[in-house]
Every structure is written in C-alpha cells, then in structure tokens.
Length: 241
Image 1: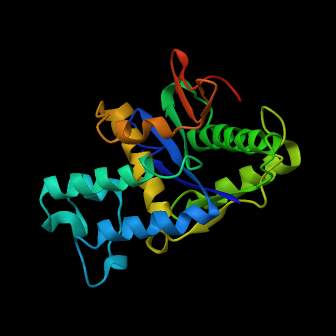
Image 2: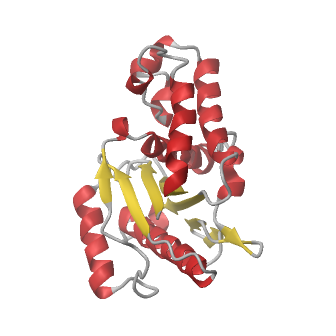
C-alpha cells in the first residue's frame, strides 16, 4: 500500500497571507519505518534521552518558538534541511505531492476543497499508473488531526459517491485517516514539505523547497505531483493527470 501523508500550511482565513498549501509525501508501506528512524536521529540531536518528545514542525523550528526557542537558528535550519534531505535521498518510490493556491484567484471556491480535490485526483492517477505497470497497490491518505477533519471527510465521501471534476477515485482503500502529528514522524515530514512550499511561494525563500523538488511525482518529463494555481492559471505541474 502507498500511504500519502498530508498537511497544510498557510491560514485559509488570514487575509495577510496570499497562499494556501496542501502537500505531503507518498510512501510505500515498507519505507515508513526507515524514514521514521532517520528522522528520529535528527530529533535526538535536541533530546537524546527522549527524541520522541521532539516534534519536527516547520514554523516553530524556523521562528524559534516554543520548544525551539532555546536553540540557535543555524541548528534549527540545519535540522529542517537534514529532515528534508532524508526524503530527497530516499527510495525512488517515495513521491511528493503538493498544491499551491493563490487564494484570491480561486474565489469563491474554498482553498482546502480546491487543493484536496487536486491532490486526490493526482494521487489516484499515480496509483492507476502503477496498476497499469503491474503494481496493484492501493492507497490511503493520512492527515494531521489539526487539519479541517470534518470538511475533508465530507469531501472524501462526496468524491466517492458523486466523483470529482475528473471522475471517481478508483484506487483509494478508505476515506482519509487523521493522526496526531506527535505520534507520526511522517506527518511531521509532510508538515515540513508543506511549510517549505509555503516559504517558497509566499515568502520567496526556496532554500528548503529545492532540497526535495526532484521528488514530485513525474513521468516522461512531465510533473504531475505539483499544481500551482495563480491569477495566470496553472503555472507548474501540468493540468489534470
């Protein structure tokens, strides 16, 4: 099974922010343990006795808030970069999916619904492509519990019963599952991916994004895993898969 861990970045209702991001990483089930172990090693730099108490979250790490206040910026940035590098150097089957929305340009559509529809379609088409090549694995989407759980579950049910803009999802095993990020390093990794994308498109800081940019799902030179919507239309990642 392929597990798509997702998180968002950017506040839907904050008028000071132009962009909303929904993004994460698709991991084949046997890769999850290896990735988590590597991320535990990074967390252990900050609490060797209890590394599981250290949460790798982009905004607090970069800003130096909460637990991260006591550590120098250079150490925090290195930890973020190293965590994303774990993804960047991981097995080729691990893919990044992400949607960037310039909120004002899709009004009156709701950013979370727009982004989720794009991601469901793109992940489902990725699984279909694998199926056609003899890999019949199915998929499951996992979210951080702080994401809009009720809205996402309602959207998932609608997609299953009524379809989305490009048809019906055919390769998902169940409606999305919501996890406590503290218990899942891969949800934390999804947070870092989403925050890195927000930094690039909202702040113009591509340092973290560039580490894993080659991991977006692609085939034949065309990137399917990244969708960027702006006033100019879709600017990266192609149309629907």
